[in-house]
Length: 448
Ligand SMILES: Cc1ncc(COP(=O)(O)O)c(C=O)c1O
Image 1 (cartoon, rainbow, N blue to C red):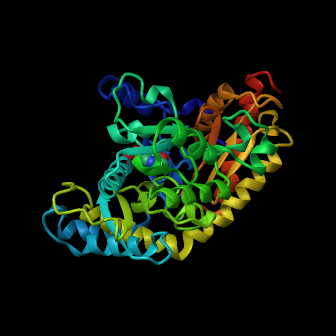
Image 2: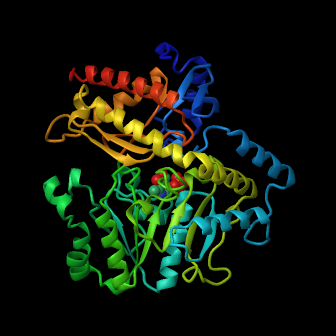
Image 3: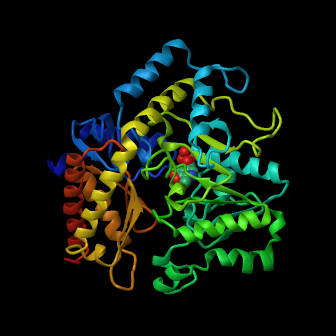
């Protein structure tokens, strides 16, 4: 299974990478020299014929695996009928069906919902914050340190994940305030893990500091948060923190926006990660896994909130019919099989990682976090939790050379977000490669 590393990337791949370097924007993080030729299920092949196991799923996108026959059939069938007509100007049923489906599964406790379909996650976030401002007539928005919401100007302004994402792009959209996010492993208030676990003060900070010293609560339109922080390092917050956010919103007439672009559509074993916390948001954003890789996103709001007038918001391509057809097939498969599989395989991966803590020094005091198939392993050098960023980076490279696609998140976390259809055998094979690659990375760092 574990193949010859000298061929990755092979000559064909190297030549395409060189051409890419010459012509594509250098802003793209093309850190992984994998040049795709084809994919099937949770496996992919590069242009030189090398096989890889996919624990990355195109950044948590290929929920049904690569080119699932039912998704491909739905795409072909729709493509033969029509490719585009502009859903903001004309009607077509496949778009209505996706909206009906999303309204039905929206985490609003069965309350009615309305849907706006977009092309991407960032566009869904943009729409959600526009709607929140419009509906409340307020301008300020609260977001979190560690957050990632996308690259367009509004979404970018909400980010506080990595400085490089914002450096050189100021001024940002005004009225955005960042506050600490619940993470007992690395409390931003400098408190011990046990203290943080028994009572996190992050939400108190909003009431006691932000609202008293800087921002009147009646000027705040929304609190936007990721129910599991994604790009920030796969951090699962405490349910009490999420409930406190809801309570603050209720107290002050603020809308709660759950950005589920990465965590939604069955990845955590429920349609939405926020459902694990027993809290309902007012607006939810979606993209990534929604259409198995076809570009589609959505923001879904309680019906009484999405009452803006014709012309207030639109998109030429949003809700593309081919993407909608892929979404319907995806939602069927996720519902019938893959959501349950995410729970089963996710539990297995977590257990395997916990077992590996006994023989990997960087996992020993690290953080293994996640729900379903959204799992992060934060690598550290010692008991003081010094980030093992270089080991993480080397590990990514060694894994690729050994035939495993796996992505980093945050500064020193490795994320496991394979297709939701992945089977046990492939999980095991991927974990073996991970184990071997981590050993190599630790050896290179002189830790073993
Ligand atoms: C939580 C979250 N929101 C928004 C986005 C932006 O999505 P897109 O890259 O489709 O614009 C991402 C992308 O990683 C994300 O993880």
